[in-house]
Length: 154
Ligand SMILES: [Zn+2]
Image 1: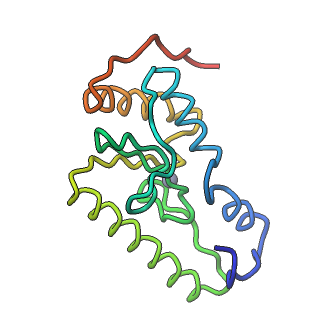
Image 2 (image 1 turned 180 degrees about the horizontal axis):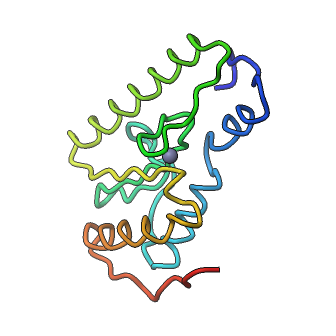
């Protein structure tokens, strides 16, 4: 994925670029920790269907994609675009968003339920609400009860 990408023009850009790429990213690990804690286990990682969802229960056709805001162009926090090589980035982001859209369409057409969780929804201030909504939905879809409770705060 790194080939052809111009060097980061500033520390802020570098930070965004490194923020959430590839597999087993910090946001993804955080989501998985919440799932385990809730007892919603039995998922497979990067299952070989469209978009290789980060977390998937193939038998139930339920998937969770954990998206980095910068690369996938989050609709919630509107991440910045690097000022240099603007055209390159615009095109790259357009392709990323288009690919994400197609992957979700493909999965849904195949009977999957797809949840997209954004990196910014997993910050200290937002993670409680995000998982508070996601876990019960998954619990219903998977037909598994939620175990215990996550510790509040800290
Ligand atoms: Zn975001």
